[in-house]
Length: 214
Image (cartoon, rainbow, N blue to C red; front, side, top):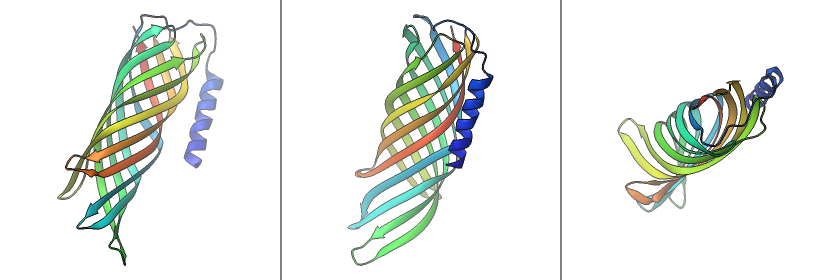
């Protein structure tokens, strides 16, 4: 929560320092190419449930160290509204706990895991106002591939993403913007070797990005 408060203050400073003189809308027909990465604040919670030898096994983890990078491109279908595709790469170091329920007893096993993933999302992004400083909101959905491993242990997953976000863009020039925002992503995954082995991930990212409008 403290990190989220700090990030909100950063956005407020960003707004206060922005030169908000008149600019123009992002005109229909413009192509956007951009990239972004997470910054220090991130909150992630992952849960999964499966059966091993007749015993119910659940797994919970909290994100420890992580890095992601995103690249995307889109087309302005009407002024200020962009439809596009982005691709994200994720690396996380996870501290987790297995809970094995054998009926009369629950065993707890700690495990450190690493997670890598690729997400492919279609998105819709709208910029408000015709000033140099433009708040924005976006939604998206797509497909996710991930690999979770620790030593000889490895699990592969695929599934779907639901994504939403909001933030602020400052246009340094009419064709270049710097952006700060918060993104929320909900991912529903299935194990590639066992469809009954499911994994859910909820995460909030603080992101910084750079966009070009051609």
